[in-house]
Length: 276
Image 1: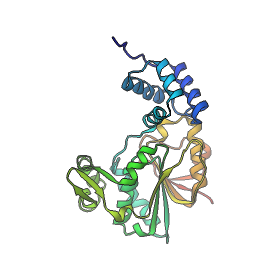
Image 2: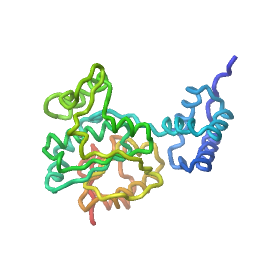
Image 3: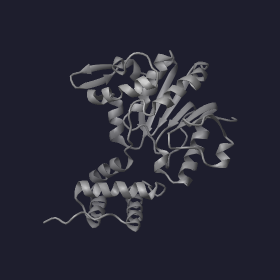
Image 4: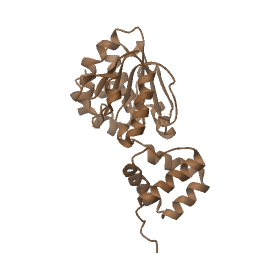
């Protein structure tokens, strides 16, 4: 008879963080402990593992670690999530992007690509798709594989229809997909000028200069010190007057960074870089 899976304790979370860093080099030390505790407990329940068993498979099974990493880093996402953000973006950011000959966009923590493709649709409707390049990055390689395919369940796409309408966009969300039975494939012109690749916000550096960076609903999993380190990365990665967009429950808290960004829309957390 199997024993019920124990709930992981705070010291055990620290033990797992140290173990993963020592063996695989991934540092989850700056993730919020509450989020880690919740996600590690979920893994233990799904795999029916006690704490000792979890440590054993993490040490001895690299394939299991890949599953572990995916579960820890996966972000809930949907197309046109927080539709009033996209409405504000259309009104307050698109006119600036239209003034550039070419704009580079970084979707940090892109998960399976829904946000990157939402922005691609927005840029296409503004007539800017061919003048823009979208980089989607994530730590989760399985999510990135899904993003590159650009194929979603038809049921999921239809569930985004209300978001699309509330964002104030033309036509229907299904206009941007080829329907294949119960699947929907994003149109090829929306996949053009798009690159999905691995980037670790915790440890990796600046890799380009951008007119726009979005990192929405990712900060909430990080402690304040890491949030500030990532804000510094974004600041250094933005072109002069470039835009930074954060999620609905996220904001720039630090006084030093408040001086580096102008608030464009406080409710929707849209900011513009001050200085060069």
